[in-house]
Every structure is written in C-alpha cells, then in structure tokens.
Image 1 (cartoon, rainbow, N blue to C red):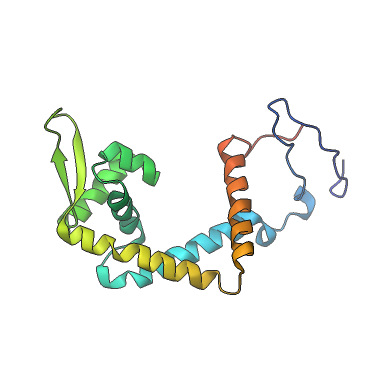
Image 2: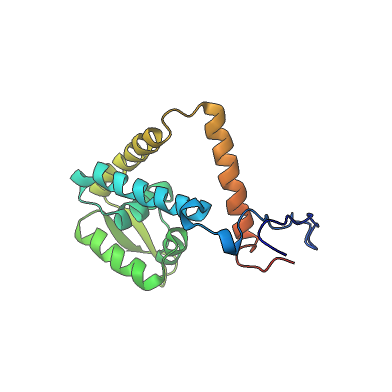
Length: 175
C-alpha cells in the first residue's frame, strides 16, 4: 500500500475505531504532526506560566505539585508522585525544595506512623492561590479569538486523543 491509499475502516476487536491514516512514512513532516504541535504548545504554556509565577520563585516543576497539593490536601508522597507523573525519588527531591522554601511540610499520620501526608504551609497556600490566576491568564491568552463553541470542541478533540492514548492505541501497528 502506498502513502496515498486510504484504508477502509474495519472495527477493531475491542470495539474501538480503527487507527486513522492521516500520516504516512514517506510524506511525514514533523512540523505538521499533532503531537509536535501539542508539545510546542505545552512548552510555550509552561514557559509563560513560569514567567507569570516568577515573583513566587516557583519553577515549572515546582508549581505543579504545589497546585495539586492545594487541590488535594493530605495526599501522600506516592499519590502526589502519581498525579504529577514523577517517580518517587524525583518527587522526594522536589518536595525537599518546596519544604526548604517553606511552602509545604510532611506530616506523619497519627493512625499509621508509616504514612506521611503532605500539607501546604500558610505561605504555601498563599503562593498556591496565585497558580490558578496565572493558569487562567495564560490559557485565556492562548485561546484569544476562539469562540466558546470552538473552545468546547477543541477540548472534546483533545479528550478523544487522550482517551485513545489511555486505551493503549499509541504505538500499535495498523492491521
């Protein structure tokens, strides 16, 4: 089959739609890739949010767990590491830096001394309150010119891509 031939969709055994055939190896251009565009957008958003939060002294790596701690108080190190998609060692080092800045603290559970829960300090809560302000400002700026309907449609498309990724479609060979 050459790059210009389109495949007739055949439902997969799992009931999922078959893979799309929008990209072909011979004509693949990375700058036209949805993944490349999403990565560029994410990098740009991360840098813009970091600039917005510059006065807090937080890096991109630091504001994410701090915000997640504000949204999910009392999580364990392992839970926060899963939410941030980091390994336990990286999360421990990150929490050490946040603790050194006086933004969070580890609290041993009174019910089970093996369990360590995380909590924001008063200063940490004050800093964490600035994060959704920065996120809203940056994302609204990136969505300038979009209608509400377009924004909702974009979110639904991105959710579908994420659903496909979470179903394990990525990297599988086409039938």
